[in-house]
Image (cartoon, rainbow, N blue to C red; front, side, top):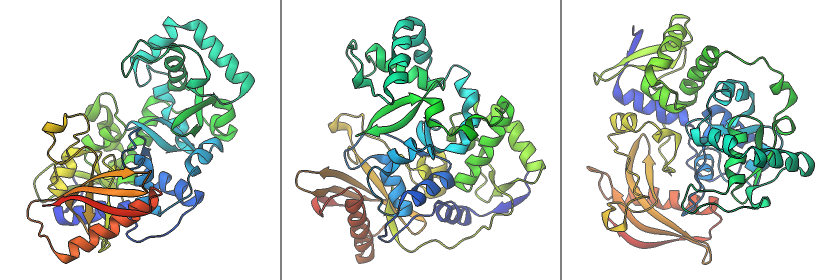
Length: 385
């Protein structure tokens, strides 16, 4: 049952305004980073550093430039935690109990559960070493994998298995390598002692957080936000209950597509900033690709794993958001030795004209991204079309 309606244009403005993008250069500290993670409900991590780590692009696009080491410090202080949500994500620490349902089940990957069955002696050794020595990374344990991206040495597999089921938590990072410690030494006691919700109550809480974090989502988008097993069927009873209780509102959209859920009482039709920002390919705004295509007319394409000859836009491409529209795609690469952010190519979206204002918006976004990546200048190495 729908309880209202919204135009597609108003929906687009709403989801952009709700993300809180910063379209001018500013500085931030640990509090602003922690607050942004809480407001977004989670920020995805990714290992690719062609331009900059994804979570840093996501966070600086909202709060501005912040000191390196901030996220690791927040993890070690138990102010945020890392776990499987959309993918591996930085999450508000008070949400830790909501993920117990995943920890006490089969976790995120069945292979993790298998690692503990196959290597019980490694698990015992890993836990004993961490107990005695404090936070450790996989490089602190000997062993070799069998080759290939996912054929990690047994200790790495066991570490991730113990993290997966909640025995270990991420206590920070060295570079981008996880440091694992006993959960009771990472997560605050007040959070650990909080009542553990039932699976149903946990899903209900996650439904609310997904919608509040994104501003508006379809039922499919809610399930995608946390990669909920069972997808729409699993979350629908909780969506219906929250609508009936008046905590969420279901709105019909004038394009005739699926209804969206918004937090009840949330203002709609906001004004958006006239500025522009470059989005990480793993930005929250792009997690639900069908929704992004519906709302922005933007087909999100990830060509990282394609051979160069098959790429249309490039290896690591950041969409350019201007006002409430995605107007182009920038193929970028950081040259850290030279201190340069290289623009290899810029592809305008269909119908977007090559204007002076667009060029200025792109340059300003590139300069802010370069600052966030610790680079001195932007260099154009390619074409704009």
